[in-house]
Length: 384
Image (cartoon, rainbow, N blue to C red; front, top):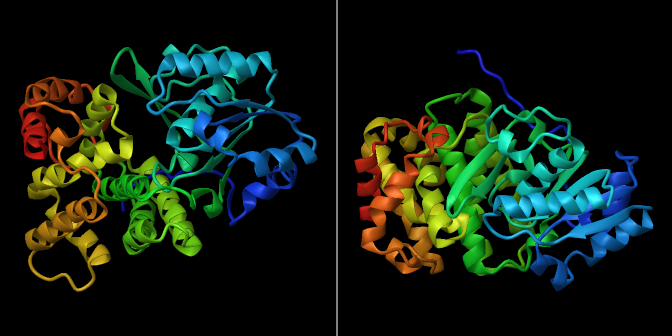
């Protein structure tokens, strides 16, 4: 066995209804008083946060809500949120929402806790400063951001860059399935596929794949594959929603240690240029990247097919094709977009997208098969 390292968050709470008693839960671990809660305006205005805010107030927390987070958050949103938190003299940070809210919360905790500029943090291992105490609470079962040391920021007009550092691991992740009950089927499907992509890419990653990440990826796929379509049909299934949250978290732990690859690299230009949600961007290219990877990754894909499609028979290549067909079929079954042209991409955009994808060297280096620019173009063409 090759030497490996494994890291994850030090504390995880899985409890339906935990947000309603968030104050006492945090008081068990934190003595800080001034708390900054990072979320988006929809969640704030919807009233979903009200029980958590009431509980925090009863526990003696002075809460500042920052709700200007948007999908694929640009750097100016991150910096504005940090300025607001500094003005409020924040002592700790809670990210509550989807992946974007949790990503902003990570960076805000560092920007307020230190004087390191955001521009110096991009890349792997470049965070130097300390951070404020950080708690993450997801409202979708997808990104796994609550247990990852990664934050993705949109820089410039369309380019995405990542900050990757162990400093970004939260002190505590809280999974409350009640917060996910109202998620519509399309969003449930897209975020669920995103979580499955995390597990698949972690299991097949060229670098840092290890026995712990493999175990987590496999269990994640068991939970996600069994529960995804049922919760899309019945969004009030609390047990299914909780299984999806746990599955997404396990996939997050897997790819935090065995990083994602070409699916994400090719998804980023779709989100950056056309403002397609991240989970859907992954779903659009997943089958086509897997077919490209199959000559190098079929034995590993076949092992995952055995997990997701019990009783699947045939050669590694046949099992791989069955797995790809199953994953592509989820989009059709749920009714989310499955072709790039359905989200506003035009054929003449494909070369620009391929060029942009090649900038994601942090991700492409993990892919089981080398991806050249012509390969990226051909994958987009297949997905068009």
